[in-house]
Image 1 (cartoon, rainbow, N blue to C red):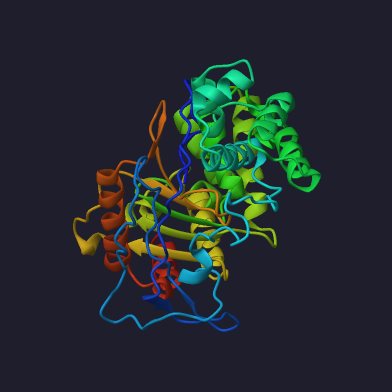
Image 2: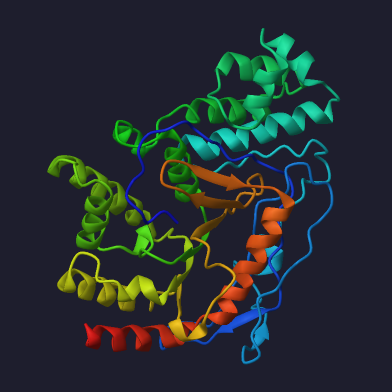
Length: 383
């Protein structure tokens, strides 16, 4: 999850939606319950599917010898509820009527594009034929189906007619979705300081039901205090005006608002010990940040682990990464890698396998979640 200074504007890169998504493993390490908190399993790693994959991926499970392994019936992160839901038996086209109303235009475009692709393929219509119908090219259809562009309601209406979707009960939700997909997200007001490729991430984060993050230098953005966030921004933008610094901090605090709401996503963050040892912003700022981490580590929807220096090297030492999962069956999991001037959304099978192994190794190497508060308290006393 992005935790570094808000990046400068640059060329846009958009993640690709795919049909296949990894199932959660039913055998996952249980997280012992704290007082007032029920036990919950630590989910296994999940990744975006290969771009042209047709088969299922192997399930890699995150285990430790001391972990109790079981699945909680009805748990939202269990295999059955996390797996993609098949279309209804009487609906071979897989038409989906109930769409999410959160996540901004990014997620809605991807969902609508995926639905249009399913409808087109169920009718055996080529992208060239579809493009001709809306006075466009096959590449325009591809961009629409990948959620890379906005949707004109007229184009969507013409495509629905071509695909045989005539019933008002089927057309109207899709046309309404096309209209909503063109509404700007809250982050658009910061478009003068944010690159479009990072706006894509904000839309995905807004819609995610589960986030997994590994950080080795900064506290994850969703867990930063304002003073810590301000120090991070000033580190990356030493020439920025006070007004710009505060606007960048506002972006971070706005992202955190949903994280503290009743619809908060589940967050599992693994931090290298260096993150909490480095006194970013000064001693008092860091002490306040560590106290905040201790508090959020007790929240029911947060799992926080520390990889201690004593653990030695590990597979993810090369850099931070974030993995996002969505409740909607039309959205695939996304692996996000942020760089100084750009970002990557990975989908190659070799990349997926590498990051899956890295995350699984991290959850085994890191200290247990119930040791986190004790670990941070010890560091706090040393500051």
